[in-house]
Image (cartoon, rainbow over all chains, first blue to last red):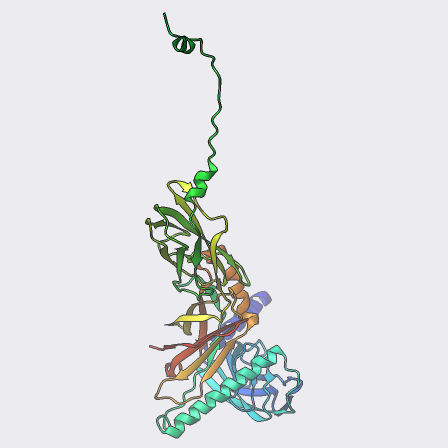
Length: 191
Length: 259
């Protein structure tokens, strides 16, 4: 009798778990765990890596949510290890996701890291404020050259947009900026 | 009965053996051209058709025949022969014929896409006899290491974004970086998105390709397939500019428009 009741309880738990997994998430919340208000040292090329936790409406962590961290493409900013200003990752069993390997660029000032989360049709967004301080080191390493080039390219990009707006052709255009993340490249015979 | 002189002639004859020596070498010396040189440009670029000329110092009395032979010594980070390098008539040897009295014959060859030294040698025959001058009739064309060249960029949509296929070549058989710059469609207004695929990610992929036996027939040519995931607003992406880097520097950009 006791065995039957415990089996019944286990089955009930499994059914409840299955039901909770198949139910749509009512609402997502982004809780900033680390990185808010961080001060990054340009000379040391170190930055506080942002960490967020994604929660549902009941404040329970959501595992498997896609989280995208987006850095400004011009001005004070940084770069992720993939060489991009955008990185996408997935929350762990604690609902947490981190933008590992963030490095500041060489432009001092405050900037916002935009965070978006998506899970079963629900989305949420937040911003993490950080500040770059200091001056670039004199000896520029090869990797830093890459970062500077990226920042320079972004600056040029900003100038292009500014020029277009000044010309009026696209001044009333919609923004709708995409979030593009590179995957693993493959190289083979010419096509 | 016979007179004295006649009797002298009728005396028994003594047989004697003689050896007649005929030297062959003066014949070759007679057939040798006065001189011949091969003229070719000192340098050439990939996928070009430089001309090579065989020039005699003076007219030759008879018809001359022979052949040109092409050899290649690569100067690449990952060396390899290049099957694309050959005479325009095909192959790495080309027959030559010079009519009596003529002093010049021209040929063209197709360069490949690998840096290195292209050496061309000529041999000459007259009436089946080798009359190649003692000094080698040869010239060398150098193909220098250059920045990569992107020849074509293709776009294919996927379930999660799009793939870019980047076709090109890199004469040192090495690529260390790929740069992609995305621009919005005209009706949208966002700053260009620049994505750099660094050496840690991409150099090994190219090294693997250039070390593979399959790549030998293509010289330094390749197609890079780069997938991109787009989480939102894919429809706003209008065009992409692609450039590649090797030790010589960054290539010119090649663009493609999203359909």
